[in-house]
Length: 252
Image 1 (tube, one colour):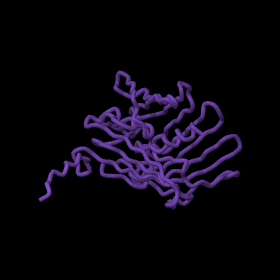
Image 2 (cartoon, rainbow, N blue to C red):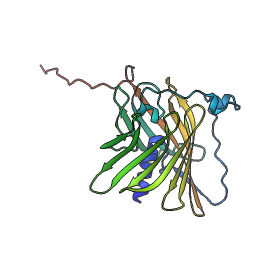
Image 3 (cartoon, rainbow, N blue to C red):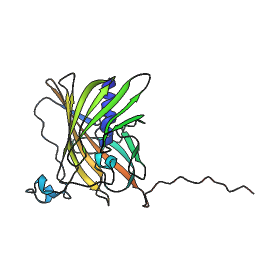
Image 4 (cartoon, rainbow, N blue to C red):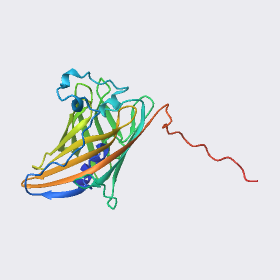
């Protein structure tokens, strides 16, 4: 139970939630109909090869690891359970998460679920190689491996210094995560999340996407669906969050 709750918290960052509406299947499932992302070079030109697309350049290592463009101040995500047609279930609970950055693009809160990580370890390129937090109940940590563009390629989740699972990302030619594969270290349980982007903002960061989550363990299989919305604020723009001054007006 503990592990599944932690996994759901991590998936909330990228929009995947096990609170999504589910459809248990025993036979080979028919993939849900997904809208085409026409903003992707691969959608407009199926012959585009990944090695012909220049590697993205980000404003800081921390923004790069999450593939965020622009001088991002915060990212708030909310995931809504849905049916196989991606119709949102408004009666079910949603999952939320957020990540905050300073003006230099350094993470100050969040990253993997809504945790205030106490320790960040970095390599010589200032990339976060491990984040950890300890409390009276459990010690939690994540270690990261990066791709050539310095985005997260995979990460390992630890509980009490024991590796619990490994998650691997797949990016499309636009630089967006289109697939996430989770594999348990202690069982044959695996989870595959497939993403389709529906909307983007003016910095080309996605703001709305659908998720198909397939969970397999031994001979059983469950499929969940969800829709995630992201609200992104940027420094120096109208979206910037500023502290509100105290009301100093005195009563007559």
